[in-house]
Length: 328
Image (cartoon, rainbow, N blue to C red; front, side, top):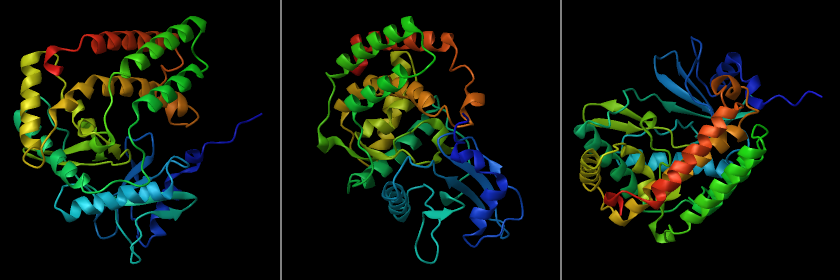
């Protein structure tokens, strides 16, 4: 029996154009597909020469109220002069639109290049930008967006992977053993609700655009309540203490132009890295019915991928157990 086609399978260029034009725009050209898998994102320009990014939200992932909080947070940031892209609103003030069976939003395109994490000027600028986001983020709380939950998210990822059809018995046992061990290790790390603020949530260099000493943050699709370090830890890529301290110093010097940083949060870097490693593989499993995923990630069904992932988690357990002294 043929399975039901994924909703994104029907999102043709013609439907993208029809959806955007239903909002009152006229598009003289075809939309250009941007590199996004969780949602579908397109670059387009209208008849006035304005360039837009159209974001079609994954069905059933977020509730409308959760998406609206993303949009309202972006509006709040723009109103305070923070460089992010706030969604276009129609005459009725609506930023989340329904057309062609999808939910979508339009954002002005922000241009630029990804930062260089070896460049002190870039690191300072990124720290200052994220600090500005957090200074506003701590003024209020999300009512509908999720909160970062190490325990729950690790368990969810574990169950996703253990339910994948590609692991053989040996791999399943090995994964269950190491994921249980990591879960136990992570019990030593916790934060109080007072430490959680509104954050961007997925602060990797692909979501930072700019040049010289000025950058913008894009894609707040994963914004949530979490400790501030959630938006900073992926900037610290150095493997040796001297380089790591340079990155830390520049980022925090910029950050504290806007907001004080609690250095006790540095101990959460490796737990958050562990969570991201586990959730990435679980995400691939969960999204495999999306037609974009098999051709983009063809190695996922291979035994070698899961052997490598299990080894990676084993190595991460050692890192957790023997954190570098500059993280303690």
